Image (tube, rainbow, N blue to C red; front, side, top):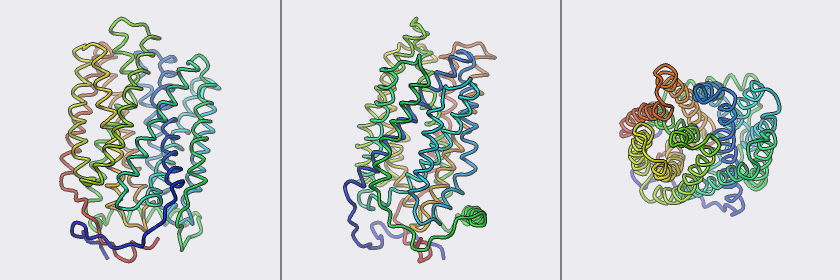
Length: 444
């Protein structure tokens, strides 16, 4: 029986839950922990390792291809993992396993040849991305509908402190000993993730199912049925499609920000090493404003609702993309990139503070894992297409067209801007009004 959209404010009354502060703190600290990996490995030092191996003319293309491969795998398996976690007694074991795998492969980075390191990066990133969907699906365990935006925003804000830690590790150790650098990042990830494993207590699944091959096949069929019957969940499919486009653009810009800053810095006459140092400072600038943005946008999400908040954030990103493109194309001075980074950081905090609660508005309580698998799937799809688009633009403008790297990357940012426009248009017809779920969608 399909659910209906309840009138504004007409959500079903639920018994008050006592959520311990340490559970909230543990959940928030996991956001910090996984940001250490995403900033230290995905955004900064693995891309620098690629640049050192293939050179500045091919680094964007090679890095884009490697990242796209890892995202293609998780795109395929994330709905299955989410549906399986709904059937299990608890979701936490999935999060623990994915985190340990990510940490293990992170420690192996740089301990072999380039292609060994690239393979370890692919596997570490797959495990990291899988962990994100299990982590997101635990948000209902540490929040209520009334404070979900604030708790999510605190997670985003505190989470970005992990970027400070990642950059600080790099500044303290340097990049001369990559294996040591990646090992410290992996250990830091695990250390800050541990409180989530220890303190977050799930309500649990009162009717767990035995996990087996047949359960996996049934989970796959369930996901297919959900997509086919998306009209039973108003706004779900449109939201997921819209999310593809904005995460495509934003995640791609995040992943190439470091290389983009290096190229802009080198174009101003700085050495490669000095350009890398400036890139680290620009990233720190963006992180600072992302922390502030997470708290501010989380507060706004509870006041305005996730839909209005996300609309404001997407409008801000349009302006940011234009500014970022002009820095490279017109050769604006390096200091202008600090302004772009500050705005991008603040808006980045807003994306994650708004869209996680938005997805929960569209998600039946009994199927959080499955729906967050779909949520994660579209994010992974965008992480395949985004790097692929970026690699193609870099090849056409820099390798074939012979344009300076900063100019080619600026044109690539304009190509991503188009995706942001498409996303904004698609999302205008999605409602975030509270749902009145049917009985089968309330019991896990």
